[in-house]
Each structure stands twice: as structure tokens, then as C-alpha cells.
Length: 83
Image (cartoon, rainbow, N blue to C red; front, top):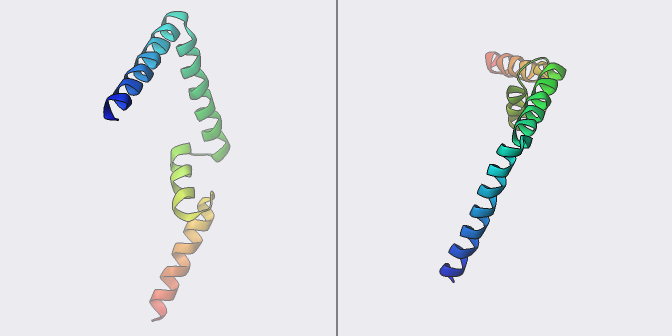
């Protein structure tokens, strides 16, 4: 069973390698990287900060805005100061 999986992984890896080499020679890999970079820049401009910071905040809090996280922290600080 493991021999079959190794063979499948070897075939998939070699196909991926050949695809990447052909994309590099053809120039489409550069176009793909430029498209990903432009998408990142566009999302960073929309959110007004690094898109990765926004994504990290959304994963942690469930909200995209900075206002929610700062309000939540200040409410938590007020609640703990009352006790």
C-alpha cells in the first residue's frame, strides 16, 4: 500500500515540477506572481493596513475592523477594574 502511495506522490511531484519549470520558461509564473501581488496590494489598500494583519484579526476575533477589537479590550479593562 505504501509503495502505491509513494508512486502516486512521485508522479504528482514530478508533474508539479514540470509544470513549474514550463511556467517559468513560458513567463506565466511571473504573471501569476504579479497577479497575487496586485491582489495583496488591492486588499491592503481596501482595509487600510496589511491584509495579513486584517486576516489574523478576523481569525482571532471574527471581525474585520480595528474598532471592534479596541472596544472589546476597553470594555474588558473596564469590567476588570470594577472588580
